[in-house]
Image 1: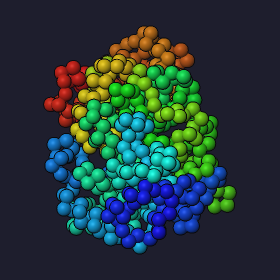
Image 2: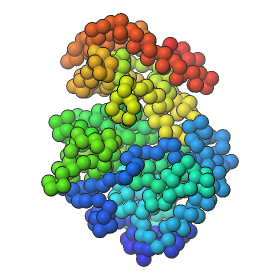
Image 3: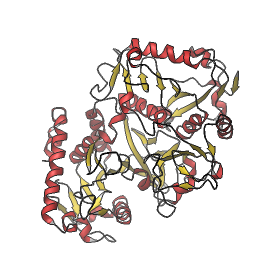
Length: 532
């Protein structure tokens, strides 16, 4: 039975998916919550939130993600980073998944990826779980109800957590599979309940499609000055670097917290919501994000909660460190209604340096910016994974390697061209450690980070006196109002200067070794900016 609002000429039957139970098209939030509760998928939390757990997968499964190797994408996919699947294996997987779906109820959401109407992607997401429908409804952009009557998707995602893949039969690695077929405009997800796979699949699509049109796709947050979208800033950064926290500055207008495009018209958000980490989230430090955890429809994922009061425990990571909440953008009071901005005036690259070597802020030349963009450095800290006892360097190119279908130099070149064309000041901001490495030093004070960023964004930092960092070659301000002078020179924050020098030498070597893979693909000015 068909329930809900859908283009009558483009139901699942028209896509070859037949024999299902009830199909719920484009249900709105209350109905999705009702269905999820009826099916025992989760619990109703305070304020009408949806409390869910995702089983054994509490994060993405990058090793189980595949791209179907067809002639049309053969020369444009970065195969070193994207595992191939044969068209034949995909067809078997598709047939088996469609067969698996028969007799079961499914939830369909027809949505937009991208706030810019000229460059959006119309996506249909078919989910086995009602709460996945709620999640993706938050994450992507919702058409007006009347627009659903003639909605035809360009791409379709089918997500069946109860489907278990067979590696030998389906050309994959385990019972979990995420398979992208650009020719058939189809993504199949099986064997995982982690909702983030839905949104990251759309991000991967846009990361492939948009650069082909000369549009930069970016794993970044973005905001702009109040009443002045021309004054836009973007924040690149991997998980845990402060991307969501720092862009949600109440003195600026939030464009989005995770994924954006940069076209000839300016910056645009891919999404209609936010997917924020909640570990150690506090009302004092992040009041807006904290407030969403008791708002109607917010998806609370993999958090521990009191069975009587339903109060959330923001410190208990016994399920996962990767506990999250998903909510619509309009739950943030300073969010942009259009999710559009101008050409970035400032580009901030965030890193969490657990070695305690990098300064809290540095100004980059365009060539240095490309170097750090391609490097995508941060560090895993002890305690985040079993067996991690000291900081582990993580170089994730373009600050988002798992979502990059094309070679990194393509994205780097696009960024370089857009910086050159539109002008932008680039900054490297360290939200990691100071006064020593992890274990002896302390976390960079967030107040200092906010002060430095505010000075960068209002232009006053451009007038500061700078020194050249002897290890990394970028410019570091000597004095900034409201920030302790000693903090700006990391070496001075260490009691043992020889230990700092040894750590700096170690980090420089890591950067140099990692960057060797890009040397044959980049221009001489970027080679000249290389470290080590």
